[in-house]
Image (cartoon, rainbow, N blue to C red; front, top):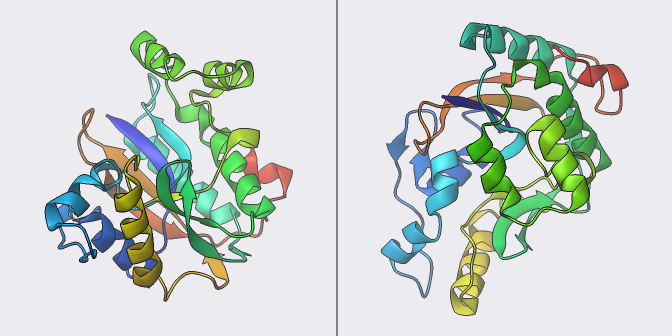
Length: 242
């Protein structure tokens, strides 16, 4: 069993509803949803192009999936999660927009946000005491992706290579899109579909704890809580270990 700390808007927020429907699964109830039509693509093609993000649920990763270390229970993690949400303050980023991140389609901050990067770093360090060391198989799998020296250091120290200076906030909307025609069709559809929630100020005012009951199973929401504290993302004590 693994857990992850995600940014997700509240369960009843428009962004959450749109994202879940785009991916074709409600991560709260683990029920399938009918995806929007995309001109030039069949329903099966749309489903295939959103397979991986559908399993993880609509989100932005802040603390990547991890197993609990020996002696730590889910109740301990939930308690820590609630304490973190009670000390972190909500904040605003300029906007989200549909962009290509490499060959993946995603919602990303436009322009880049120092606050969201600092907030993600705080999540990495604050939740680290709950994380079990990576297995040899997990380390080998990550190393096979061609990490640079710094990313290897981050993997060894924190269990994930794309954090701190290598972090890029993104809410994934697709698998890797190698076909130019499919990529263009999906991007155009996403820009229209998410038009009501992009290119305007966006509040980061909640946090989600998600669970993967077994490897390769769909992630399910444990809970989503509002950020009700007083510590801004730039406040160093926000990232103190829980």
